[in-house]
Length: 270
Ligand SMILES: NC(=O)c1ccc[n+]([C@@H]2O[C@H](COP(=O)([O-])OP(=O)(O)OC[C@H]3O[C@@H](n4cnc5c(N)ncnc54)[C@H](OP(=O)(O)O)[C@@H]3O)[C@@H](O)[C@H]2O)c1
Image 1 (cartoon, helix red, strand yellow):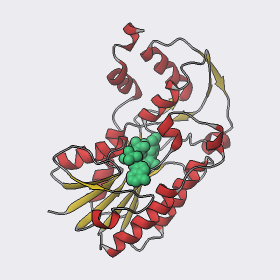
Image 2: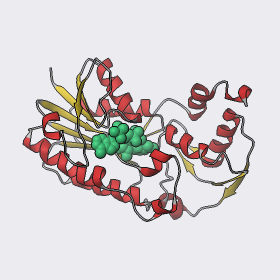
Image 3: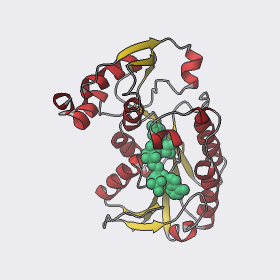
Image 4: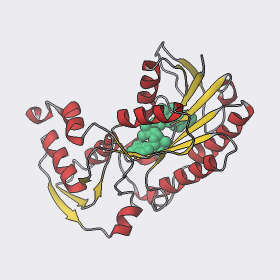
């Protein structure tokens, strides 16, 4: 049976991609720094930043889904001043480059790269790093697909949670449609095996939400009572921060339902 390697298969999106592949009956190998215990997939230990274990992980692989990334902001759930100046590129640029050239050596038939909607105008250093990685994929001689997704609900949860200590939340009044990783995973897996290639339909969530409303819903779900201070942003500034509405494929899970799933009970406990 054809083998699919998932990089970043232990991450938020990666875990959902692996679930979906297994459910669909694919043979799956997960490339990870710390292999997990799941018995229904193969595990390949390694590190994209150094290349350790990568050649071995690609043995016999037909399709690669590259969902690995290193975002300090997502990891710690907050923006620090340093994030406005630089973001490490060892995984997303050098790691992607290394992965692409080893995929060519290993005669991989399809390389699907996960990326982010609106990167061309986004100004944060992490976005510039992601764009550089994406450009390497587009320039590759491999058969490739790029799927761009809107920000994930889990990341918004982390960022908003980091504001919980503040009595007043300054929140931009911008419209965007964040999405759940389960919907993105379905779209990624479909795109990996539908026979098409190149720039693929991007994916966002089902509703266009104002960030102010989204933050209010978040506070309600968690039983928080913080004053929200709406901040007006120009369109260019909003796009620079990655706040756009994606008009591609739409996921199904709403922010309200995601909050319900993750915080039902939090209100009464608060
Ligand atoms: N988060 C968002 O809102 C968002 C929105 C649109 C698109 N995306 C894209 O979706 C993809 C997945 O994002 P995510 O939020 O699910 O990421 P995540 O939860 O932070 O997971 C990242 C994955 O990459 C792995 N990784 C990191 N450094 C590595 C290294 N040196 N070698 C090998 N693996 C390494 C991590 O494994 P370890 O546990 O070993 O670190 C983890 O499995 C990325 O391409 C991201 O840019 C994300």
